[in-house]
Image (cartoon, rainbow, N blue to C red; front, side, top):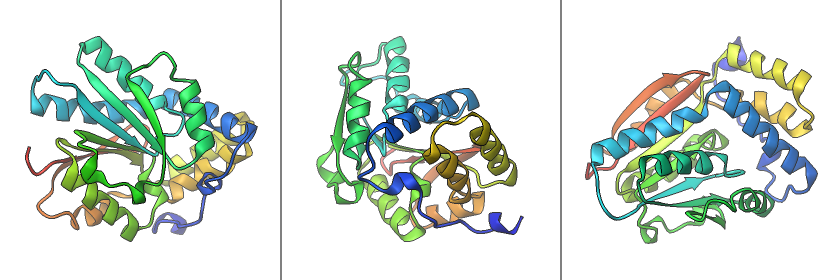
Length: 239
C-alpha cells in the first residue's frame, strides 16, 4: 500500500496537449460513461447548488467557467439542471487541447448557453472574466502543489461566488477497481493507462487541507462522496 501514501507526479497520456484523432474521441466517450455510472458527476452539481442557494435568487444570468472541461459532459449536465430550475446562466469551457475543444463543440450544439475556448488556464487573466463560479472536475490532480496553489489563489480571489472542485480520492480500492474495470471493458489505451494513474495522482484529505491553508482566510466545505470523490467548495471572500 506504500504507493498510495504520497501523490504520484507521473504524467498521464492525456497531458500531452497535442494528442488528437480517434484515440482522444474514444477516450472522451469512455470517460463520459465511467463518470456517469460511478456517480461522480453529481459531486460538481452538488457544489454548484450549495453556492447558488447561499447567494439566493437574482435576475441576471450566472456565469460559470469549467476549467479543463474535456468533452463538455459536465457543462451539459449542469446546463440541464439550470434549465429545469429555469435559472439563466452562461457557461464557458476551457481546455488546452484543441482536439478536445472540437469534440466538446460538436457534442454541445443543442446548448447555445455553452461556449468553449482553447487555452492554458495558467495564461488566463481571471480578473477580466467576471465569473461567478469556477469548476474544476477531475482537473486539479493533473498539477503539482505549487502550480495548484497558485491556480486556486487566483480562482479564489476573482470568483464572485466560489470554486467547486470535484476530484479523486487516492485510495487502494479506487485504484484497483478502476484498473480492473478499464482492463476488461475499455477499448482505449489512454483510458487503461490514465484512469488508474489518475487515482495515484489524486488526493487524500490531508493533501487538500494543506493546499487550502495557502488561501488566506478561505471559507470552505470538504466532503467525501461516492465513488471515491472529494467535493471541495471554496466560497469567495464576499460570500
